[in-house]
Length: 127
Image (cartoon, rainbow, N blue to C red; front, side, top):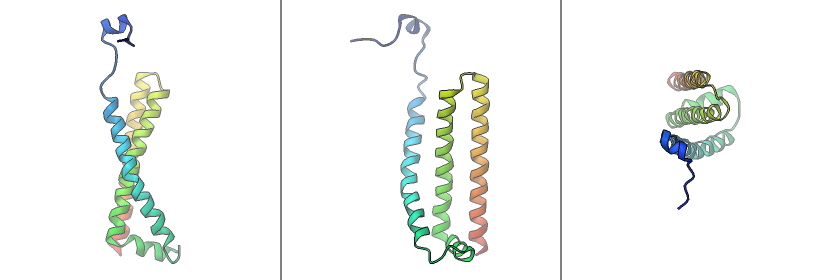
């Protein structure tokens, strides 16, 4: 059996951080959740009689539409956060800068997701 680890890495205990698998599966599952939601969004928007403000507002005011849109927003920003963290891991070598980038990505994604959910709820509850 061939070993891919060097003797020095075995002595120092360097190797897998045991966290990559969970991140990998989270990203794949969020992508899987986004597939039917994006298909629903495309067909729903294509089936609207018009793209004027009143029609779209009435469409978004329906309970099922609002719920699916909120799920799309949450899954989309969660998936984007995971993807941006992977980019930061690959391209930022400085640990402090990478940590600051993770914090900025997380807060940015949360802020945009909350804004999106609030907007949908405001339209849905006003209808």
